[in-house]
Every structure is written in C-alpha cells, then in structure tokens.
Image (tube, rainbow, N blue to C red; front, side, top):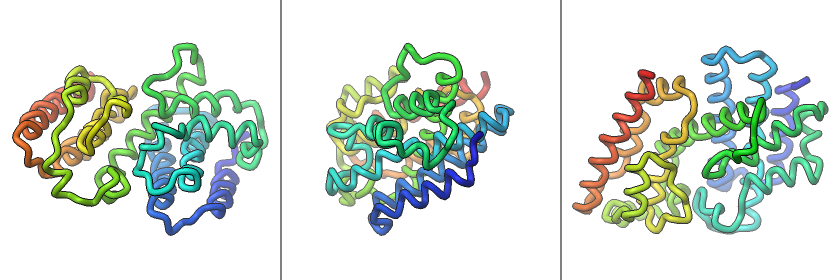
Length: 262
C-alpha cells in the first residue's frame, strides 16, 4: 500500500537536513513538487490505476533526493553540472535502499525494485536495455514527468543557478558548439559531457523533447508553447548562433507538431 500523504510528510522531514534558503535547494524542492504535479496530470491523461498513479507520484517525490546532498559535497555548482562528478540518481538509490531511508516513505517493500529502477534511470542518457515490464513503464513516466517540469524550471529560474553565471551579456554573445547543434538536428538528447558553453547547456535542456515518450505530454508542450518560450528567453547576438537557433527552433516545432498529431 502506498500512503502518499505519509510520503510527503517524510519528504518534508528529510528537507530539515538542508538549508532551505539556498537557491539550489529551493529550486529542487519546487522542482520535486512540480514533478509530482506532472505525474498526477499525466496519470489522469493515461487513465492509470490509483496504485500506479500513487506509485508514479512517490517516485516523483523521491527521484531527486540525491540532489540535496550535492550542496554539501559540491559547492557553488550550477544545476545539472553535478553529472560530471556526482550522479545524483545513483546517490539517491544509495541513500534510499542501502541506508534504508526508503522505509520512512513507504513500509511496503514490494515496490522497491520498481522505485529503485525508475530513479536509477531517470537521469541517464537512455533507459537500460535490461529494464522491462512495470519498471520500464515507471522509468518512462518519471523521465517524462521530470522533463516536463524542467521546461518550467528553465523559464522561471535565474541564470546563475541554471548556467553558472548571471552575466546575461556573456550568455547572449556565446556560440553553440557544432557537436551540440548536430546532436540537436539529429533529434537526440545532448550528452552533458559534450557541452562547452552556457548555450550548449541551454540547448541541451530544450533537446529534452527528443526523449519524451507520451504524446499526451506533447499536447501540453504545444498548449503552453513551452519550447518556443525556452528558445526565446535568451536574446542571441552572435550571427552563427542566430542561424543555428533559427534552424533548431524550426525543427523542434515540426517535431512537436508531428508527435502531437500522432
């Protein structure tokens, strides 16, 4: 049995270990609840059972629990940069299942393997080929729901937290690396290890659309005009960048329209 109210209370208690005035902590708290909301919205669209709806919401609540520890181990780092040295999904699974924290959120251990698998795979470049069955479904759900709230994050959070600098003039005059442009135009996720500039990382966020599984989420993206708004949040000033952005934006909208109609 999944008691989502009890799980949310346990999450609030866990947060007492961290500085809630830290902008990065604030971002992840808000993001976590945003992913829970996205899980509820998609579950309704897909007509999931109450059990799978509650399970998807629990996984959403726990998916970034390893993020909070990064503020203690890695100081002054921008969002997602921890992937270079600290895999928050792997750490989250350690905290939950090796250290036993999972029992604070749910007493029933019959869901453990699904929860563990979904969290482990939520931030990887792709889901492990060995994942199947219900664990695969929930891995897809959390990856989608995480990305859906990430679009909101990129529209609302400050550049310092997202990109490591609040020098907007610097960001606006940057270039996009060829490998990032080519990856995007190939309709693939951007590997953070390939990024060299702030704009590379920004394009990497937008490229999340190429790893969304459920057409219901494309309906939401189109309805809220999320991708155009993400592209347009920055005023690009470099001529080569402007040309690349124009082509990527056109491709992205064509892709969204195709998926939204399928």
